[in-house]
View (cartoon, rainbow, N blue to C red):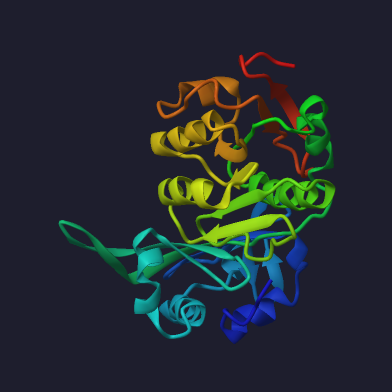
Length: 290
């Protein structure tokens, strides 16, 4: 994790914990700083972590301003397109959710006076997708099944997608299009990978599939009807797709009004446990448990 985006008191606190076990940092002005550490909510203290709110470092406006200025390199306006969407992404792929005062003029103009940050810490776990990779291989077609990776938030979907992208690149000559809408895959590259960054899915799908002629598309977080329609158009053109979506179970997925059936060949649900890549269940195109 890049620590230079944080003020010195937070950097010193991070030195007293294992960054590999840190998944999320929440800063709310005037309140204790909380973290997701070892998949548990605890507080950030001067000595590292604490179970007690009374020991926590209190978030000041200066903490938030320091992070915003560091990530934007003191040029907030240059990042306004991302800010309007409610997030910033650091150079190494740390995604920062933003809360503050929204400015509208028929549509959103910007967000200012930031009051809260939700900082997601990305992790690279090489090999965490091994089991999933074996399950989505379609050896008959020398390809992979179009696959949707599902779980509740913070269960490793993005980490799995990163590892799958590397694994497919290393084990085949398939042309891969990586649609990186929020710049979370910046460190993923390879001889077969074309990455489109900072583009919404609709634009990326419409121009990239035509111009780059991928055989496999990988993208994160299908969360609205237009995302599923884009995925449907890709599959209908003969291209395979691997994507992710928030859903706790098959019933939860089916209940979403934006979900479209018959796009994916495999639906892989991740376990709610702490083991990355553990499969809770796999469903086929007809949504039947395999």
